[in-house]
Image 1 (cartoon, rainbow, N blue to C red):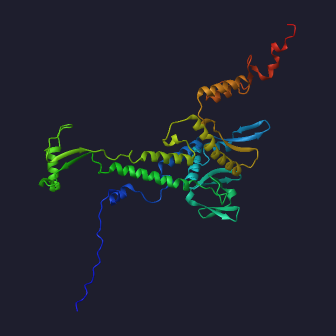
Image 2 (cartoon, one colour):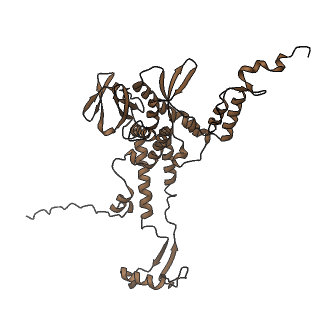
Image 3 (cartoon, helix red, strand yellow):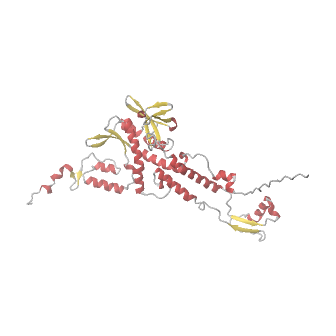
Length: 395
């Protein structure tokens, strides 16, 4: 009895396809993987550095409440805070470190340890974000760990960017909203770099007869290119056999076709919106004075308020004193507008002559701090002594 032949299962034929975007070289060139650190993204760094430098450029005034209003106090404490709060850094660099740490490495938190001696402030020591930990203590309290040592929150300066949802005393950064945007910007940069370095972008294609023996090997094709196409001078015409060659010009794929520029601009605007900075600071759009002044009022000053309130709360004992950032220099004004405001205030007896000069950036010219008023520019206290007010009705 004959054996039954075993049926062989027909294996599906493997279809092979070639795609540049799926090749190993292209994948490694055009695709980026891994975690994108916010501190390594140029657009995010540009926005954060702008905020940090603006806050760091403001002078810190020590103010005192009096019956006649708040006045500026100048002493060793005010000099310490305004010149070198940390002995190894200037005030500008110190404030920039606080803001940058809150936005980036500290994920919404920045810790500074005040060193005191006999009740006097000696130094403010910035603590790296990697050396600190915030440990919850019950529901409403917490402890601060610095290099393994535990500290009470009242004994350190704790600056927070945004109050947390679950722990209000812990700051929350902008890492989560910016993560996807940072990945897109990194991918756009990698795609642009890979596209510009790609060799698959010929501007001219030469059709040849593949049955000709000369074109069967790379050496033959190179030889014919040297004989017919390679010229010694720029612009020299080619002389080629009509039966074997056909030259066609093509338009290579450009970055505009990929709409890469539009995507990058959209992501930059998204970064600007999340950081609350004007888009022109990130290279998108044009400068607008009103937009800049609104940026100072809505972004810079709330952060400055948070910093100055923490300094006041933890460093000053007397309720009459407080720290204040001077923000007037950050607003964008024309000198003509400043001079016009100063002139109006001067002739109305609101500002003195030296205050007017200081308003427009000039040094004091005299020790005259007496207020005068429009008419004959007489002192405010002598307004009632004008002759026209003392004339009798018959004159």
